[in-house]
Image 1 (tube, rainbow, N blue to C red):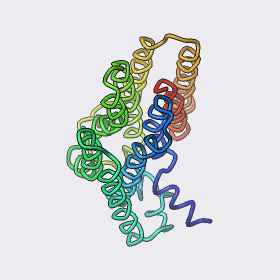
Image 2 (cartoon, helix red, strand yellow):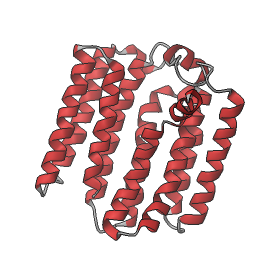
Image 3 (cartoon, rainbow, N blue to C red):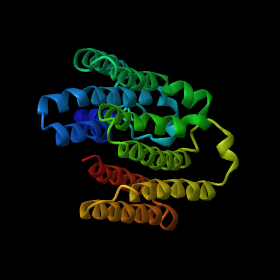
Amino acid sequence: MAALRAIFQLTRLETSLLGFFAIFIPFFTRNHDLYLSFSRAVPLLFISVCTFVANDLDDMERDRVNHPDRPLPGGHLSPVFVVICYFTFLALALFSTSYFIPSGIDFLYYSAISLSISYGYISEYIPILKPPYVAIAATVPILIVATSYPKEPRLYLIAGSVFLITLGREICMDIKDRAGDPVSFMHRFRPKALGKVAFSLQAIGLLLLVILINKGGDIIALVVMSLLLVISALCWFQFESYKLSLIVMKIQLFVGLYFLI
C-alpha cells in the first residue's frame, strides 16, 4: 500500500488526469466517439506522467528541502525504479502519439514531450522562466482541441485563461519552494508582493471566461471558480496555508473543464 501511494505521488496522477480530461471531454462531447476521444487523450496522460517523474528526478536534491515527503527524498522509491518508470512512460508517450495521432496535429504532442524533457534545464539554469514555461505547457491540451476544431475560436480564449491561471499558480508554487530553489531575479521581490501578482493573474484568467458565458451552466461554473479563487486567497494570505491554497487552485482547474464542453 505504501509503495502504491508513493507511485501515485510520483506520477501526480490527479494532475496528469487533468491533462487527459482536457482533451477527452471536449472530443467526446463533440463526437460521442469513445475510441477517438480516448486515443486523442491517452498520449497526454503518458506525457504528463513522464513530466512529473522527470521533475522528481531533476529536483531530488531541492526536494530534500522543499518536499522531503516526496517518494525520492523520503526514500519510499529507489532512484533506479524511478528512472525505469521515466523511460517506460516516455516510451508509452512516444508510441501512443505515433500510433494514435494523425500527422498535422502530432506536432503539438511531440512539442509537449519536448517541453517535458527540457523542463529540468529551465528549472536549473533559467528559473525565472519556469512559471511561464509550465503555463505554456499547460495550454498544449487546449491548443490540441482548438486545432482539431478550428471553427471554435472560443477555445483560444480558454487557452489564454488556462495560461494565466497556471502562471499565477506556478508563481505561488515558486514562493512556497523559495528556500530550496536556485536564486533568480524573482527573489528580489517580497513573497507577499509576488503573491498579489499571482492572484491578480488568476483573476484576469477568470475574467477572460466571462466573454464565453452564454448559458446558465457557464455562470455557475464561473461563480464556483471565483469562489475557489477567493478561498485559495484566504488560505494563502490570511492563514498562510500554502499547501491547502495550492490544492484549492487545482480543484479550480478541474471545475474549469466545464468550459471545454
